[in-house]
Image (tube, rainbow, N blue to C red; front, side):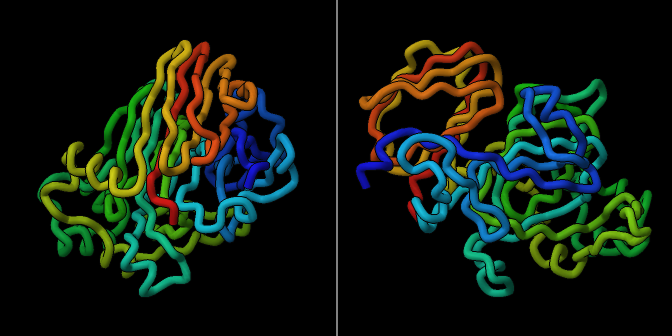
Length: 303
């Protein structure tokens, strides 16, 4: 498709959540819709949200129209309150028990963190399925005693393969690259109630079936290797004329600070802070220059 031979930018899809805020406006100057905005889906082709192209001859078409079977989803998450303690299933589980095509392995880049902010990254070493099941039944402090809390700061990268228990703590903003999936199993939601006075649904039985209780679960190398089965995330610090060769899969570039410029055979595409674009395999080689950090998420899996 000749019209696809250029980097595609998109209109974001904003998701209001019980734990969201307005920080995407503060960090990136976004014009947000009313409410507590927890997620911005910036490059997505999922049944729960598919982005519309904002630039060039393909403007107005959806990513689903252009790239059927698109395997990735990129979002920015603003946690103004703690997210639920949760886990995502892998490919085999979702294909057997849900309507999803893919499981949900993901990776977080910490864009911003308030002083003292933390994430939950797995269970504490040695916690067994039986112990965690009992803790979930007891709730509260019993669950918290099983969680591996990690202090975080901007610029850090955390791989989260399917099966790893995790949660974002309040005051953290992350850029998330993930498989094209929206299946989440909540284990604990901090005993909070929504606007109607109801607790959000938990999925304890499903979670216990998919949690990775292996000793390797907290090993960074193990987590990165599992993520590498689906995608890679590179972090470019102030690239100047960085040459990127043709790629077999898709690439998602996200500019986090200042201005960025993508020069390709057919022209130049500019990205403002917080903006992403999709490089299709047909675009070919390009050079990247930016005033700050640029994330490059890529996949060689074409669906």
